[in-house]
Structure formats: structure tokens, C-alpha cells
Amino acid sequence: MGATRLDLLVAVEKANSDHGYELRWEQTSEGGTRVPWVRGRIVPLTSRSEGARRSYSGRRLKAACWHAYRDVLAALFEQRPRATVRTALATYHGREGFERHYPATAYVNVGSAMRLVHMPALCDH
Image (cartoon, rainbow, N blue to C red):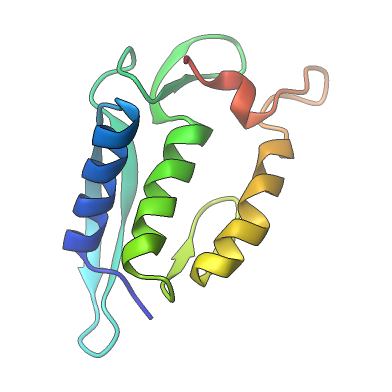
């Protein structure tokens, strides 16, 4: 089951209002008639916005932090409990799959072999 652009917009707004983030949905494509799908990114308004993260070197990025992604996806799965979401780190089949697999993404090394860094450590809040 897919999610629509509106589903993502609502999920981002819910995460913003519930957690004080300054995020937006940046869509790159969409399609599907029987099963809708969208492709894009969750991004903060600026690299200093609430919900932004840093690179492993400490540089500010215009990228959403691990916690912000978690909160947006949780809001999405509240609306569409059977949706499938594919990210760079994992594929979540429904709310149950998300709740089971998302915590493990916290332990993926996004630094270097010499300097291990995990996603939650890069959040600015």
C-alpha cells in the first residue's frame, strides 16, 4: 500500500507541530494509479532549523536528523498503517515493521572507519 503527497505533507506538519521542528517535504516524483507512491526527502528549512543534523565532521547540514525522520514516519504510519516506506537505511512494511526495524538504524555508522559516528549523535537538539 502506498502513501500520497498529501499523506506526507500531513505527517510533516504533525511532526512539526508536535515536536517544534521546521521541516518540509521536498518531492522529486510521484505516480501510481492503483497504488500511489511518492519519492522525495524530508528536509529542514535551513541548516540551523530545529530538526536539522550535522555531518560526522560537525558541519551543519540541510538534512533532517534521525529523530525528525522517526517522528515524521511515525505520523505517516498513524495515517497509513499498512504503507511501505523505503529509505536509504531500510524498508518498512507497515507500522509494525517500522516500529520493529527503525531503532536499529541508530547504530548504522555514518562516519568513517577511523571515526565511528551514529545518526542520533548528529542531531542538534
